[in-house]
Image (cartoon, rainbow, N blue to C red; front, side):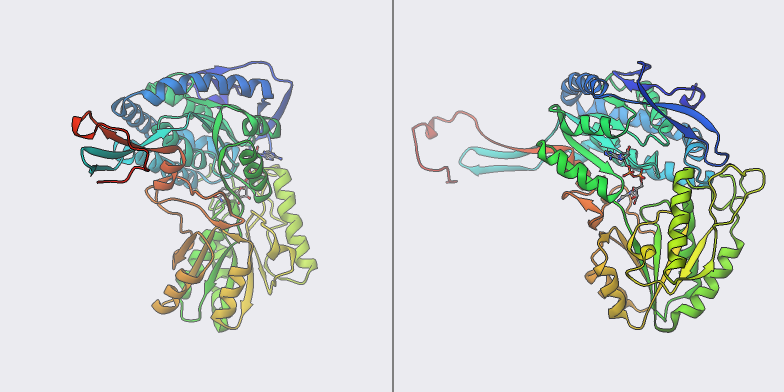
Length: 503
Ligand code: NAD
């Protein structure tokens, strides 16, 4: 099977087919490890988005009425195909995003788990029934599809984040229009080919590449019923406000600044392993990365010594090299931005314990590399604390007591994930209850819920009410209806202008 990456200019995917309509605007994708341009990505106009939504609206009519068993067969077939092509997906991720291949395989696995969750659609879409709510009257609830729904996704998980959305939306009977990140869109085209092979009717899954123009066209299109967004906080807020102003249901997941609190009684080896894995995995480009370590009392010295040893052992290189622990950043622009944050941290008085700015990977001099960086004695008010860096930069804030640590975490405007490292069950339980974050880890640095729970943050990390996948995902992509029925019964004939109450 041909994979989309072999084409010079990527197609859109509309109405069940690759669409190579000429485009006035393009962007380029570079291979992150070498900096070489590998593909051109067309940027959709509003007219092209309108065409994709139009095809989706037609397809949604039939798909939304198709039997659960038919939908279920397509979902299971898609699951098998994604599983069979998992290495192809991972190779595309490593090429365009840059993360190491093993990490990319992990990403595909977590996406696949949402597909598997959606395969249980018969169970997920079951309604409730109350027999005999009044004499001869029964009530039952239905969950029905919305029609056309759109997904707008970030660069950092080009397979998993779209899969948080479209398997559930499609299982629920909707047509889905995906606008993936223009920085690494090829895996979405592979998914489109696999949906077609799985027997999904044309138009139920579409991919349009683009930037603000395409996003705005989706947010304002009268035939788009709901929008799922994942990306940075300013754009998430904009998507939420614009989409809801146009009458759409919107869930918009934003950025993060995830704190890990380390109490003095923690297992310091476990905590150091956790901080290094969660701080530098995927070069820090994860919305659940730990970017702030909050050391309580005298935990800082033993912890930082162990973190330093582990950083020194990390190998940074091309993601296709099995010896690499950490790959490059997604683009040169992003690498320069992250380096700029480190410069600001140094200028603002942070102590540099590890500095990745000068890193050069031999043979990959054009790659967007920046090594693991550790900044100590950081305080709120410094740019490296206040802003999301989204790179391999872990900052350390030292506090004296647990209440100070909790206050710091809760004062942060973001609330995606938070973790605590301790052996004290009472402290851990208090943290679970009191912390203002949507996903909490106890001795677990990256507490990403499984597919059958829902994923989402609080505060500036989520605009809207519903988290993605799991039961909340099913609710987001359906609307409820309650039927109250009575079959003709001569005993109940007669007009009654009073408000209906049960007998
Ligand atoms: P981004 O906000 O730049 O882009 C996300 C999407 O929005 C892309 O599809 C992009 O094309 C589109 N977009 C960009 N600028 C736009 C504009 N002005 N108007 C309309 N649409 C626009 O995010 P990114 O750099 O691709 O991804 C990294 C960000 O995503 C980080 O902030 C990270 O924390 C966040 N993220 C959050 C989660 C979560 O679950 N909360 C998960 C993954 C990533």
